[in-house]
Amino acid sequence: MRAHTVSKGFGIVAVIFSLLFFIVPFLPAWLHAGEINASPISISPTDFIRGENTIDCGGNGLRIEAVSVAIDAEPSIIYRGTTSTLSWTSTGAKSAEIDQGIGIVDLHGTLEVSPSKTTTYTITIHWCKGMTTTDSVTIEVLTPEPKPEPTPAPLIITYTVPSDTKLNVAIDSAITAHFSMAINGSTATTNNFKLRDGESDISGSVSSNGTTITFTPSTNLAYDTTYTAIITDGITAANNAGTQLDSEYTWTFTTEKEPPLLEVTIRADPERIILSPGGTNPDNSMPKTIAKRETVTLAWTSANANTENRSGMAVSA
Image 1 (cartoon, rainbow, N blue to C red):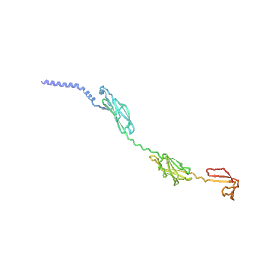
Image 2: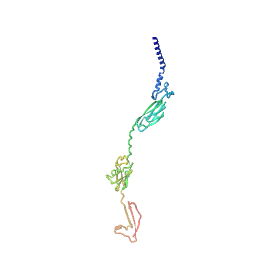
Image 3: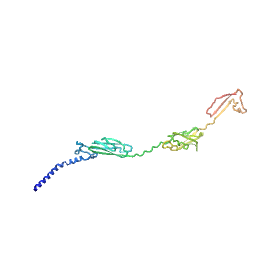
Image 4: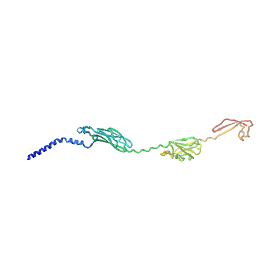
């Protein structure tokens, strides 16, 4: 009875060892199959699947040699409002997409972007039954410094009439200054545009017309006199900046000389006749007259006159 029990126990052990002999060689394959049927995985761009690690994509035993994806940005640092170009490549992928609202893209390509703030762009490629590979690039966005306010053009006097140091200026002249831009008429006053004879201000009025202001004296200027015209920095341009002259502007001019007095001489020939009431003969002895039907010729000369008539005429009594 005892021998039979031992023999039976030995048989059970032999069966167990036999089963292990057949099962153990297949355990790696079963475990590997369990990994393949697991949930989707993601690998790095440089993972390689080779040889005995062939992945069954779609049940056809597709051998995938390599899967990779790379994305870059140029430039990677930009100012807000400017652009950068994304560029990417991939191998072994079936489809690709980029986040940040871009969506599905070609497997290789470029795209210009203009993010308003620092942004990371991630590309994802799909290559086998939900398996994915990703790569990312960050574009740093800087806030540009505010642009400086443009410097307004200066207000300058381009020329004057009369010009500086001008001689023989007519005494009835007005004095004019021409500017580089239109003038604010409210600043064209006798406080800002003056005419002086030495230390005395000349009375007058000031008017403006576009880029010109004019000082008109109340009366004629004096002969042969040097005057000084003065425009202060109170004169401003008719622009938003109210551009002023950088400094006071002065110039001088000299009026014409006074013309000599008009001189006229008239005489009669023969000289014994003086044609003026109460006139006398050359020796002043007595008044002279001419007889009836006598004639006399008048002759005259002049100096400093605008016109002169040198012809004579006969006068008869």
